[in-house]
Amino acid sequence: MRLDQLNFHHLFYFWRVAKLGHLTRAAEELHTSQSALSAQIRQLEGRVGEDLFVRVGRRLVLTDTGQLVLAYADNIFGLSQEMLGRLKGRAAGTTRLRVGSVATLSRNYQENWIRPLLSDPSVVLTLESGLLEGLITRLVQYQLDVVLANEAVPADPDRPLDCRFLGSQSMALVGPAARWGAQSLRIPQDLDGLEIALPGPRHALRGRFDALCATAGVSPRLRAEVDDMAMLRLIARDSGWLAVLPEVVVQDELRSGALVTVGRSTELQESFYAITTPQRHRSEVLERLLAQGPQEPADGGPASAKP
Image 1 (tube, rainbow, N blue to C red):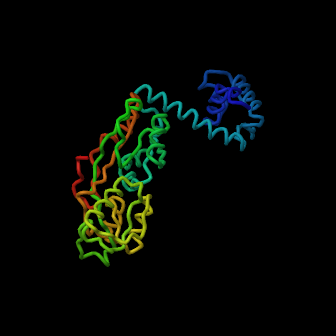
Image 2: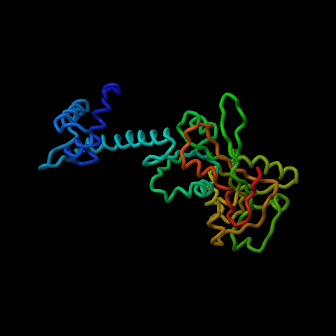
């Protein structure tokens, strides 16, 4: 069956019967007769090629195929209700927020940013990660609502984007508390020969860190370079090496005392941005997130309000 052979009117009638669980109540809601409603559903079953309901006594019970069709119908008509709410400038039922984040961005930072929505039962989150250019392509094609990144996107008149600065944080040098708790080290001057884990070459600040070391004539002993911040967090926690990263990546380990910050660099500031399209129909939940102030660093110190 091709898509143009699927009658969405019939699918809508099926959806209401399945959701209400009763043919009479669905007919009343849809202002039609039971016989007309039954005929619509039989036509849909003819197109699908299988029964969607079986009658058990006086009840209509979904078949396995009916359960599958209902799951898709929930998505189709749920998104339709959401679309109408967005176009009318108000929330209507469930709101879906699709967030992309660059692979080198801390997942802790992403969770902190969306945290106000985690207790909102009306919000469904779709979260994905990838390379910045691929995420921006999906954003301008309206497949994402916002992209979180640690670098700004250049101005492009052929691809207008809103790039909102969310805050920044100094890169920190962290290590196991048992070994480094009483020490204070300078970045990069005191790192010569020390075992260290670093963000991978794709990270916005990796090139700057390497340049600082070269200028200072310092050669740390590189043990790992990691693009994914969640993996860098695990290595910082479990390897015993020092690690250079934003403190938000290891915020839980710093609070628990498993790791300590032994140095910071004012020359290495990671900035965070929310990238959106300049559209009229941004959702209310996204506007609430964009209105938040700068995120607080993991150690409770003041976050920078300047890029």
